[in-house]
Structure formats: C-alpha cells, structure tokens
Image 1 (cartoon, rainbow, N blue to C red):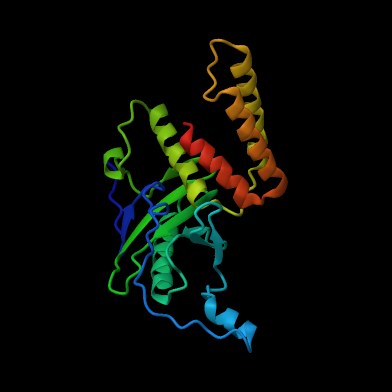
Image 2 (image 1 turned 90 degrees about the vertical axis):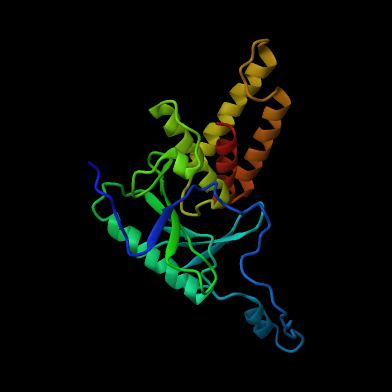
Amino acid sequence: MVQEITFPIELVERLPSDSQRYEDIEPGASFVSIVPNSLMDQQSCQAQMEQSTHPEWKRYCSPTEGRPYYWIPDLNVFTESDVTKEHVLRRIGQCAQEILSALQGSNKSDYDIVLKVPETREGGGTCNYYLVDHSSETVFWLREVSTTTLGLPKARSSNHLQLLLSEQFWVHYEYMPPPHRDLRRNAKKLLATLGTFSIDASSSSGSVSPFDQGECEMYSRALAQVLSNGDLIDINWCLGQYNSHER
C-alpha cells in the first residue's frame, strides 16, 4: 500500500500544458502609472521602468509570445509567477522547500521543479507544480495521480502513458525553454530526420513522412538558421515546439 504524502502547503499536481501563456491574460490588476521623465536622467528613468528581480533569480522571455518566466539555478526551480512581487517570491520559496525536502530520498538527480502560485495578496496556501525529468524526457509528480485527475486521456498501455508524459515534457520546453540544457545535438539529429522525411516524401508513392517535401525543406532551413544564429533558449524552444506537436 502506498503511503499518502501530506504537506503543510497544499501542493496541487498540474500539467505543463495547463497554462494561459497563449491566452494574453495579464495576471494582476491594472492601475494608472506615471511615466518617468527620461530627459534629464536616462539611467534613473530606466531603473524606474524595469521591474527588479531578486538577484538569485534569472528572468527570461519566450521566443514567441514574449511572456516572462523565471529560473533560480541553485534550486533548479522555474516559475511563470511574478517573483518581482515579494509575497509571490515568498510563496514560491515555501513551495520549493516543501518539494526539495520530499525529494531528498529520491534517486533522481537530473530534474527541474516548476511552480505556480496565486499572485493576489489574499490568495495563498496552494501551489501548483510538476517536475521535469531530463534523463527520461518525461514529467512526474511527488504522488501517484490518475490521468483523469491531470486532464490527460486514458492510457492504453504503459508505453502510451510514457508517450503522453513525454509530450508534456516537450510542452514544458516550448513554454519555458530551459537556458541550462544544451540540445544542439538533438537539433542536428532532427535535421537529419527531416532530411530522411524529405527523401521519403519525394521518392516514394507510399511515403510515411508526416510532411511533404516542401514542408521538410522549409523546416530544415528554419532549424538550420536557429542553430547558426540562435541561443540555447531558441534551440530548445524549437525542439519543444516540434516534439510536443508531432507526437
């Protein structure tokens, strides 16, 4: 019998795809702001316009929709919650400590923690989370949880379940591409795969390629351009976008 794990903070399992990143929803209330005068002191104006982030946290933006997300390297914690707000930062810290304590006896080491908390001052006590296993390219949680509870389709087999969790892994890479993972080798392998698809599509009447020859060549050119000119976030986003939509 599996012992139920309980936590002082209510940890709620969620999927990477359970996000509002593409819905153009601005968290928090809007208010009238004063635009600072940059005529006399441009440096002071810039400081007033920028949101200050805790020095341990790094701020990144998605290459496509531009929404910010945050990463703290020492804890391997990601969040799209606005940690420039002190009360949000405290909640994220409390949730991270709860999860790190629970993971102390785990044999997993190559993972990231992804957290999301309420951003209003009144909201609190709950924390949505998932864990990213880079070794197996899947997501996981601290407790056993059913696919129905998560919002996943029913799995026909253990292999099907693995594919569902792997798809969510790549959704995470699409929404919050990690800056500390170097997947250039994976991107080159994808280029080779697109090349074989292109040959199959152009030379076989019974092609099993998911793309026609023109699409293969277009994707190959785009990915080669990102490999030549982009950074790790751009490359990882491309892999996340492709793998999460073509499985």
